[in-house]
Image 1 (cartoon, helix red, strand yellow):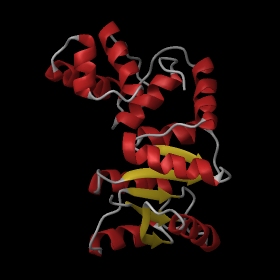
Image 2 (cartoon, helix red, strand yellow):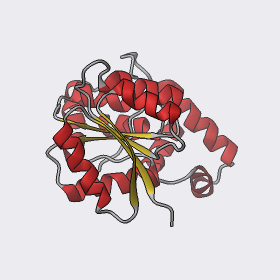
Image 3 (cartoon, one colour):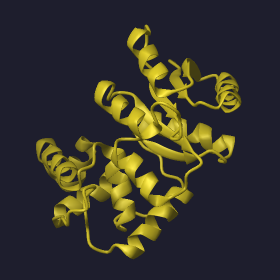
Length: 219
């Protein structure tokens, strides 16, 4: 079985080395790239022989912060799944990173078991949501009842779109959703694309966070 290839970008040497040591202890994971900042990460990706499956990135870094690095990764390397590791707990920051394409958001004080679980889940399903992130988004929901996309524009979802959104959150694939709802795969793909367009989300992770934020799905 092939191992999950990991890249790390964090300007704190001790933290970065600790992550590297933890990954080395996991038989199914392989650290393929380690960088102290965004520019170094992008240069290594451009010149390296293999791309990582998952990039672990910090937010507060000199030169290029994690927000900018995530945007670059989403544009240049869309197949790399980004997992944010940060001390910031504000909902607006969490939401911004997920809406910009990050597959998961973890606080740096999380337990190592959750860290490993998050990597496995992101590699398998494309997203991971933990309780602190869920609670942060629920606080947002209490303050904002009207559905709005990532640009704060009010939107409406059809009953079918809502139904498909809930199934996406339960990790059903397009063919599985089509079978469950007696629809064609092409129709399901159309609804999924409409959801992405309406919400402004980049990917499945963004749709899941949108669903949680507005109470369509409960973790």
